[in-house]
Image (cartoon, rainbow, N blue to C red; front, side):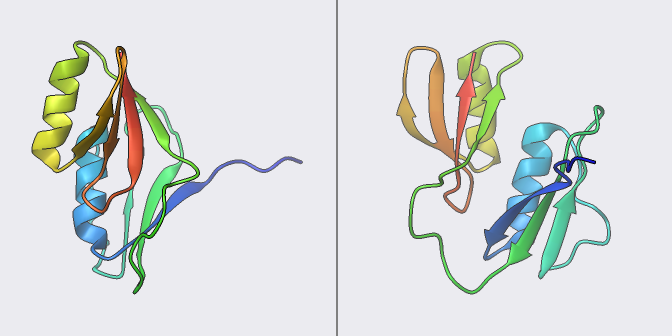
Length: 112
């Protein structure tokens, strides 16, 4: 037997806010049983891993060693603008890739 990725876990201060950002970014919803201590987002459509959010007392202190790479389905600038409107921030821009962070500073990339 082999293992499979069941979920990707985020440590965060505000589970519902970070889960809400990622649900909106990925076209899903925050599970209705989510609480301020734990929240999760089911993958839309294709059945990837669940995103799990757990409240922790400490804040983020360093760069992520693992991150998501999102592919824009359309114009890269428009997708970056949509993510900014949801609460993301641009860290740096390259020709066909933008490094961003979610509302609690977790880095991710958006590419064309």
